[in-house]
Image (cartoon, rainbow, N blue to C red; front, side, top):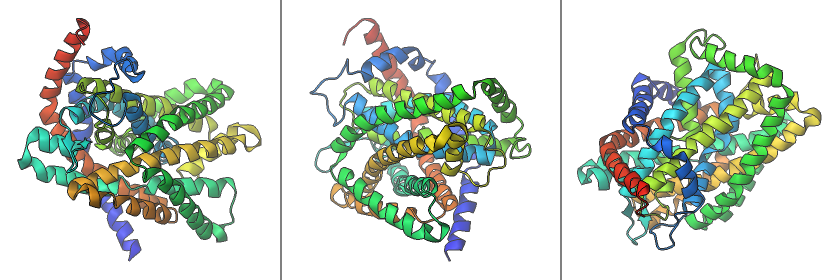
Length: 454
């Protein structure tokens, strides 16, 4: 029976990630990129100033500072998708998939600017009067109550898309690979690791959004710096190969010869899927976190959110890809995901130092993502029901961590990919309809910025 469910999920994932969704995500993002007039991209310096707290005000509505909101959103995005997801992209689509991840990231920056500006413009409240954000509130508050079925559709898909299955699965796989657990003990070891992970995660997520934001704010800078230094070391040791790797990425991006035998359409879909998995632009998760930011200026939060795909995909994912390609292990490697990344690190760094450092990074990456994703699912269930019932999502979430640790990676990927695709539909449609509202607000904001009227 489980095999039949796996086949059904695999078929649905392949169907839903077809040309129409690709046009919606990339075409919609490209439209927003052009429609914005590139104005937000010209204010990246201002976005950094906002992030540093220059414009923070204690009396602003919301729960998190700009920094904590971005840190929490990045904690959800800079995670296993950057380590394991990149390896999956290379294994299934070849080096050319990385180019299409880059394309997705650039248009994703524009998408994030619009979606997260809207998450502040059209915030809602729960029955206790607490400020809430996300596509479901953007739809109901911005488009009106008649659009509520679309908001319910997003929230229902979000219950599955924000489950911690991928992170839990790859975290346990990392430890199994590093400590070379005998195959006969895999099931027991994974189950015990899954239960242990669930207990640790529960200590943070039951503390609410403020504790999640506080923990994420401390973990994110550390994990990014350690990981980037390690990857840069690998690239320095294989520096002579870097130019050839870039040539390979660009050449393979338009041929797909390395893995897909020239299937360019499948290559583009692979890159877009893995970019969406990594930076979440257009999926609607980040607006839920950014919607809790303490600010009265929607454009400010949009500018801060825009930095997410740049940090996540253009920086972290790119360096992971270069390290894997420089190691050479991707050619004919049996398996994918975290196992490939571990092999790549150990192939370049001596005395298994790569495995040790990567394991530490994976632990931090995975846990930071596990902490923040719970808030997304809780928000979706709270919208569908109420806050009291919504809090029960955390119990489902913790249970899923243990179960996901012992099931197959392919099933996990297809399940989450399918849910992400469904989440993207209402998010992008509502964003495209309400884009003129954001542009009007942006014109007013940047005018005030020029005249120093804040």
